[in-house]
Image 1 (cartoon, rainbow, N blue to C red):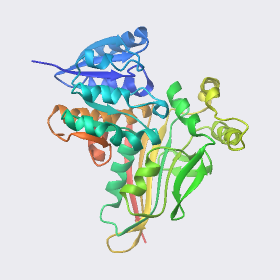
Image 2: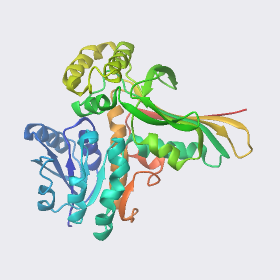
Image 3: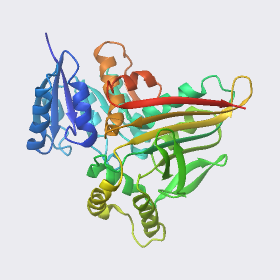
Length: 374
């Protein structure tokens, strides 16, 4: 049997390593783990081999600044889990589709996702492959959850999507850099019925996440800020919020963002390594429980006022598996012939909530849906 070769870039990262485990369960797959450090790659390869996965697993060093290496590997599919995508271009997706490979990434960079289709679609269609961006918690899972909540509604007034990881959850440098890239920076947001400018990590508030309790959250720049108003008839506001479990960490970052807002620093990115170390020192004071919330208010099919909430709680530091699940679900659908589209797409409307969550298997991750009609 001919194996389908998948090149997983960023396989040693927080999300990439979880995705590797999901992909290794597939029959008929040759999984190539790719990153910069061979020692870390071999450690993941050995873990996968010890667990008896179905896939054939190899490891090799890979540098994203040399995208020409993609075609030499002759992959069936390329998955990029190596952020931060706020600092990425389209060299890797173009290299993938140009050699006839499907492409999927876990991008959460707002500008990167917004320009992806224009940059990649023509080449993907020419080579009859699918290229997908944003196959992660945002916008893939958030949109799938919101679609299930508001289908049939007459009107959607307000939407909030929020993510709050546990303090003990592993945090890669790329994730820290992604957050700091927009902290204190101007952010365009749909609020109070119009587009206006706010600031990254501003508007700190307490938000109830079922199963987790009340946590601090602030404005986070992700593709959802564009995609939610575009794909749903939202009248008043569409916000994406993120939070750090420990109040000193969250409010401390909120205070530091003013250094950028007041022009004292151009960006907090130079502090990424220091803040990552500080977060690690404070982590023992937090928990290993993280979660996600999608909340909508509006009017249902009978024109009654309605509030609907979908929430997810991940126990025992399993939260980092969630951002990887959508990419695994797309690979599974392609592998089984259930996904036959070609061209470049943002990962909206491609997957149901159930298909994404199915990739999380027997992990201690639970969801609930609550609807209150008035």
